Amino acid sequence: MGQKQFLKSRFFKLPNHKQFDFPARYYDERKEKLNDQIKAANTQGYNERIKDSFKSKSRIKSWNQNWDTIRLLIIFSILIFGFVFIYSQIDSILEILTKSSSK
Image 1: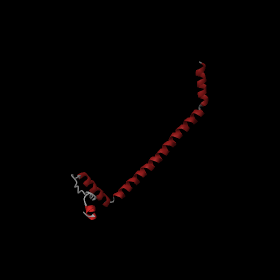
Image 2: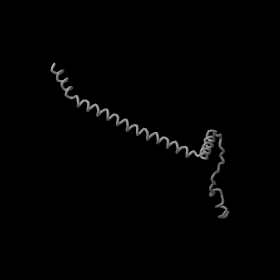
Image 3: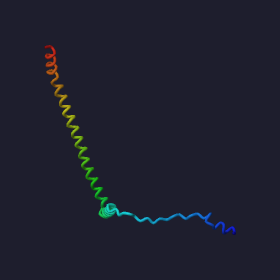
Image 4: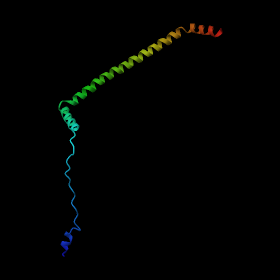
């Protein structure tokens, strides 16, 4: 038994890696429909529609911000009007309070 035959024996031979050909066991119809819809959306300018929807939301948002400012101004004007009214009538209010406390 020569040296070459000894090295060629199965004792020193490393096994090859195993290769698997594993076919899919089921067909996912939802996934296929989703992929088809994505492909169709990309060809129909889907990105443009998304940009347009964001632009319309920003217009609504700016109106809401303007309405918040208007509402704040209305509240402040009512408060200022109330304070001015109370300040102008302070003498009569103090008179009513002193009469009720002296009784």
